[in-house]
Image 1 (cartoon, rainbow, N blue to C red):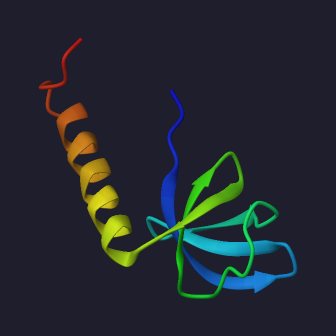
Image 2 (cartoon, rainbow, N blue to C red; image 1 turned 180 degrees about the vertical axis):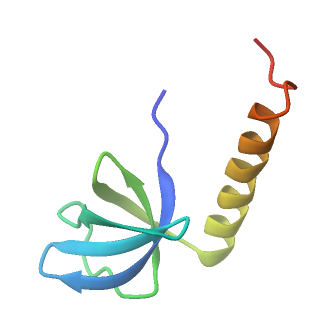
Length: 79
């Protein structure tokens, strides 16, 4: 299973962007997308931005990830 995580683009330098994911800054490749802009959200997987997503979709996805983290720490996750 592959998981991509929403990140907000905070700066761009040629084909590389600095993206904020959960408060951490990571560098990702932009070779798979055209015209990415600072302030947009992108889905990040294996060091690359795969697609743009809306602010709302990014927010919902990040909420779901936080819920999964909470479940994982509470012994309620199925085995």
